[in-house]
Image (cartoon, rainbow, N blue to C red; front, side):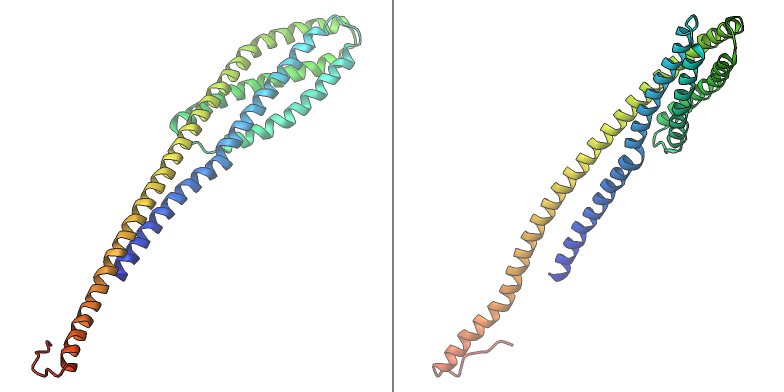
Length: 240
């Protein structure tokens, strides 16, 4: 009986340990991979749009006076943007991906990012040259080159934005599926724990009854025999 109860306790404990380890691993994945990944994606996409707005602002100042000071302001904002974008991207690519689809999307996004970042090296250099230009005649060909570079940048930026959205949707879908799987694990653990507890209680009651019966029955019979002997009958037969 003792061994049976120990086995039930070990069974319940093993199920609990496996279930908790599964839930703990998934929660750790949320903390280390999924939530940070989604936050970084949002930050990168936000900065992409901010940098794009800075880029188009340069064209708006083409015919305005005091363009040098305005371009310096954009240049300062751009430097701050890169200080946010570059570390965020480094963190993002280091996040492990559980699915083949996720890895493929990140690889595709990495190609867009490298092209986007390379073309902005050209744009930033052109902004610096526009700042250094002393008159409109020097700026005119630079603006023409800048406009042509922007035309090459826009499709890359759009493609990267779509990749951000696709990866975010895929990450969200995977996270929801993982949460639903965890809920099923928790529900299964609950049902198994209740079932094991009920079986353990029933088995304990059965074993208790059998053990009590095996002890009480001989005592009761011995009491009856002693009562007969106490009445003076010495002829009763005493079993072994």
